Length: 307
Image (cartoon, rainbow, N blue to C red):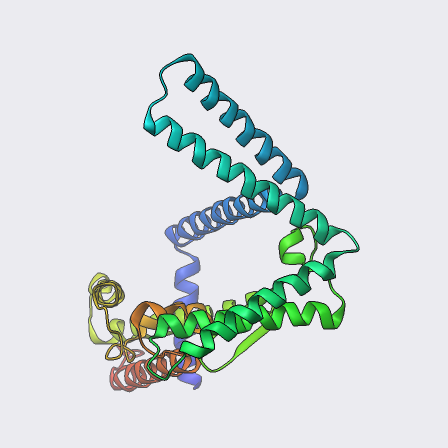
């Protein structure tokens, strides 16, 4: 271990004295800040659009556009396409007004009645689905079923804890996020989901780093080693996109590079196979362990310090 410490210290000292290291670090920080600011602005705009004030503005804009379409239709000979656009816009205005009325009720003292109505509708829907439910359900139908379970538990949680349905009001800080999967459905705070998702993403990055480390020990050229690791990631991604049945691809690390999809059941639905979060974490851990052990074995065989 002492030799490993010497190697790490030596390589670190050489790295920080290279100007291009600081150039790359600054570029990475700038890009990270730019992406973070962009995502923040998108989320802020989405949040504003789904407040009561934002919804009123959307309705006003939609009504103005509808008035414009009707005026154009009155001034000229209305075509079938124009009539269809007017019908679509009228339907859109009605739906927005329903959403606004719902948001106002959720912000009032009558919010629990809205949640009870939703719970009754969802329960009736699930009872109807349960009559047709069988063991032969495909992953997409399973995901729909578990999504309904998650939504039902979320509504029950709001009623039991006497907490308004904040995901609809969009003006509260605490958000309850349903996590559906085939065997269970969880309702957890969004902050907890975000932190755990970042930890799982860190495991995926460690897997890629370990594979890159293995490539660097097998090939002398840094470009070849980095290119090999990158090619493995790209090839695995393309293979996943082209395959309709993913039951034979579960062992590929590139399938599980976004463990959040494993957790939510999205990956299982896309690949039509039961790929749980445990499966993803296990596959990534195995790839990381094998890559690191193999790299250490070859690294120890090389006489790096006396080279």
